[in-house]
Image 1: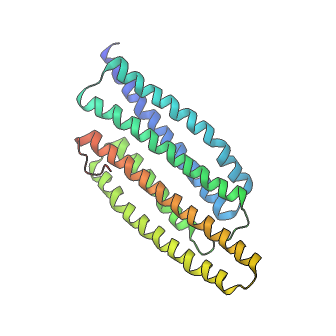
Image 2 (image 1 turned 120 degrees about the horizontal axis):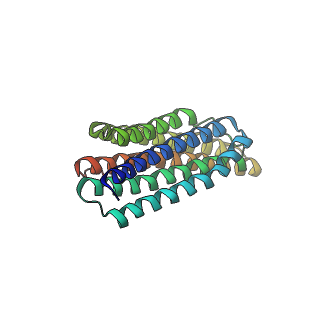
Length: 225
């Protein structure tokens, strides 16, 4: 393979990772819309689309393996391929979490989530993923650190939301003497806590993308965990 062809393959890998990132962000946005509105059809579409995300992830994984095996990249190229390989995994897992949100809406569309501001937390997590993918595209070290800092804010939002769920909805359950009513409230509590947990995990995967990018650019493992 000529040097030009090799560089083309590396450029193609970057473009494919970015395309996967765009699709996963769109998937997450649709899942959040379905969750906030109770749109079961949109939720089902999110769940169905996960298969395509998984197929693209496997194709990218194969692309990285071929570059490792056939080109044996070294130094910065090796870090780029290795980081891209890991970033694809994090993006695929964000897609899985979006699918979880779709399933919550599809399976329990009437549950009450008024006590949790899903759109506010969701908007922050979407922005975090977008910023992480953009940092990868531009190889922006400062942006990688900002993603990690912003994730602390997302964690705080999720922690507050979880506390509010427990306080408000469980307080409502305790005040309700009807056993069936208590059971319904407890189901809402479980769904709300799962939603908050999954949104927090989206932020964690965004930090992983930033950490892999930082390693890719500067051989700096400071954000890896």
